[in-house]
Image 1 (cartoon, one colour):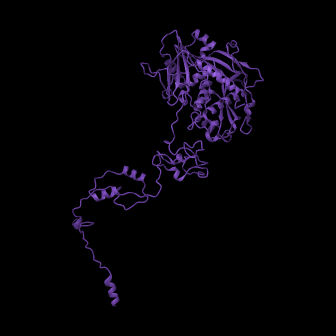
Image 2 (cartoon, one colour):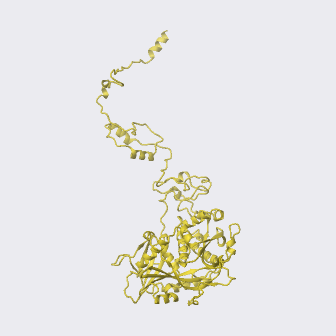
Image 3 (cartoon, one colour):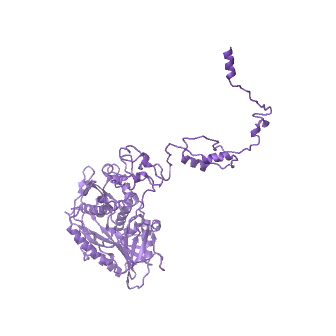
Length: 582
């Protein structure tokens, strides 16, 4: 009993607290507030407010900022000690901060630094490499593999790992080079130095339209063309035809001002504007261009001649010009896939495919049976024909264009249809994104859509040339390398024939925009300053290499004459060397 009494005495005492009974309502009585809390002011609060915390391990910085933005404004708290506690509180978070859904550092599928299916196995950088350091520089780009040709843009992953940039801010801005070096003696017509501004913005050119599209009429035809061979139409992915290797000649260059037929038409006053189909196609598709190009404009009296310089980059065939990751010449380890090498390869493929499309065993057919014999002093390319077509743009403004024709084909009704032949080339399926050998037969539209995304300007130029020439069909060939590491051997995977009008609709090339650009540019060029009506005035249209705009310069009358001699000298030296395609 004594032990029990001692144990009971050791227990703490329990004092029943005083409970105030509120007979008039529910809850505590108004006079039941403790004395030490009686004069404490009441602070209103929002339901989103945190009344207090010791430490929260799952709260991240991004959520903290989002909570501060969404927090409703309340009255300042009278509790000074609470404010001091909020300012001195620092969150300790050992968990990786969640990436935002949008903006810099957002998680996107297929981007380097994120582990996809097979990403770690393929070499994609994961874990700590995807985080940024304090400078804002991604660890993936800082510790990228120097042997990887894309290491300066981000780590390269394998299947599912993806490749690209940790953020769109990491991609360096490319600085392109102009197609021709601007001389100090050239006078820019940009509105400075008391001159009128003749600069043209490509964004505005893309919005130009004309209510009525002019209809072309053929006024002359020169040359003979061969019929198309039917053997090339049998090419398929399973039974690919090897592309024949031919000796590629220099591009046919005959300025419109030196063309005897155009001279005769200009003396007769048939038109005020004279040009070639390639030069006009460059203007009509200018809003889609990315790389620099230039055209020579010459004013002789009331006539205007628009030509292409000899040796100009306009004669080159661009590759992946409008692609997101367009090729360049900066990578010394991948010379075979550089911009210059790919352009040379594409030009050679285009020539060989055009020649292989023709059947040289049959007699050629004249472009114009009633036309005069060839009046040119220079020899015409083998199997090339020319059409001279005229358009009445306005009552006092007419246009004459010399158009090229590549071949002819016999139709079912026995008539002759003229065609133009062009070739698309695949150099690396990993770069283009679609393997032609797997998708060309089953998903031909997807292949064409991918080529339209990567070569938007090139396809628009070819279509403009076909529409200007008034041909019946446009033959398009799909050429691929035998091996992605070999740029000298190619095979023909498939050939397709399109109506130029229908193909223009597929690539969203509108005739109202084409002729709206041509009409506006021609009227603007006729307003160029002329010092002497009788003297020859020469100008240069130069597409800015890094801005979507076209600049005009007034150049001397003998400009670009010396470059012909230099190019001829270089050509003689190049003939002594062995070509990569021989």
